[in-house]
Length: 303
Image: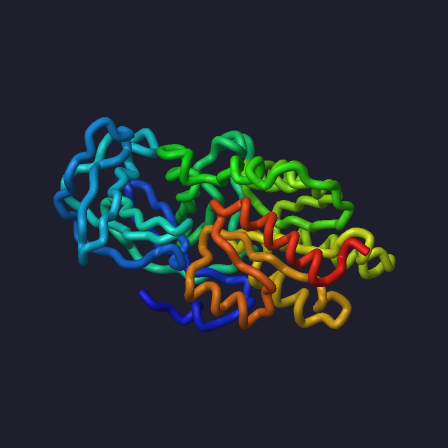
């Protein structure tokens, strides 16, 4: 599934595939999708999570099939419908849905963040809501769904302990991550790795506001020497943030690390074209620290 948006850089737009479960509309970022195929028989896996339907092997690649209806607590899907085959966090997973309606191109600014009346932020399986043709489409947090089924697919915080005893570093790092849980894990991991001068924001727009304020009062070097950003975020995504930073002479030298579940070869090319200094997939928290170490040493940022 190749779309024009993948050819454009830093537009702060994305494409959402709308699909149906029961009588409700849900969405997934097209960038996560490899293909959509008709439902096919799967082989059950003994003692697996109740939401795992089983495994199958299209084109000699083993893929885990997840019953999305079951994940959302709405019963179990019938043996019909479609598989949306995804790739994120270096995992190939098929999500069983009833039907697919089409693709909507939207701006991250048009995505409404769920509030506390819907669910608590750390428990929510929704990353946002969009309104199309008087209908609400709930964008699901597929990373959290998978992590809830198998926590080993999440951030491997144990990697930080393996780095051993480390000296403290006052290098100021700005973090843009919309998931409250991941934001906390990244901050905690960096602090355990010795980096304790951190500003964490909920999206690219908040991070950019920090940068603009520091530029205005002349304190950029005191507060922002490294930027770590997710890609998928409301208001402003990480690619747009990268483009704004790297096309501004005042900030172009600040190293940017894209830390996202969407990082694959295609997305890496996009990040490189925007000027990202490093890109890696979300489970690799140990490698994130190593990359920050390398950038700090190379740029002599601790001076």
